[in-house]
Length: 209
Image (cartoon, rainbow, N blue to C red; front, top):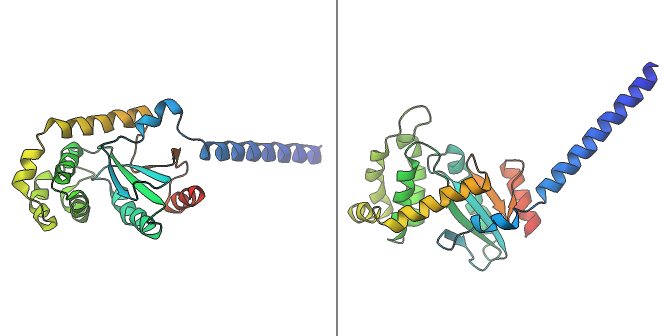
C-alpha cells in the first residue's frame, strides 16, 4: 500500500512539474496582447542603439530605483556588443516619491541633447538624493547637473513645458495598461521578462537576436 502511495505521489509531482514548466515556457514566449502593443513604444520615447534594429528592448525605469541603476550599465554593455542589432526604448515609471519631478529633469535635458548625460549623473549620485525610507532630497540634483554640461536655468524653464508633462503622464498611463508595478520592467520584442534577473534578461535578448 505504501509503495502504491509513493508511486501515486511521484506521478502527481511529475505532473505538477510538467504542467508548471509548460505554463512558464508558454508565458515566457507569449508577447504582449495586440491591444496593448501601442503602450509599449511611443514615438516620442528616447531610443538608444540602432533605431532600425529588429530587436527592441523596452525598459520602464524609475531614476530613484537602485535596481534600475544596477541594470543600466548591464543593458548598455549588451547594446555595445550588438550595435546594429539592438535598440533600447526608455520609458518612465516614476513610482518613488518625487520621481515624477526627476523624470521631468531628464526629459528637459533632452531638449539640450543631454538626455543620457542627465540620466547618468542622476544615477551616479542616486545614493545622495534618493531615499527608500524617507523623503528624497531632490534639490541636491541641481548641483550635480552642471557636471553633465547642462544649462540648469534653461532646464528649469523647459521642465514647465506642457509637452514634457504629457510625455510623463502617457508613460504612467501605459504602465497601468501593461500592469507594471515595479521597476525596472523589461520587454524584448514585446515579450515580457517573466523571471527577473540579469541572466534571464540576457537569455531573453539572445533568444530574439
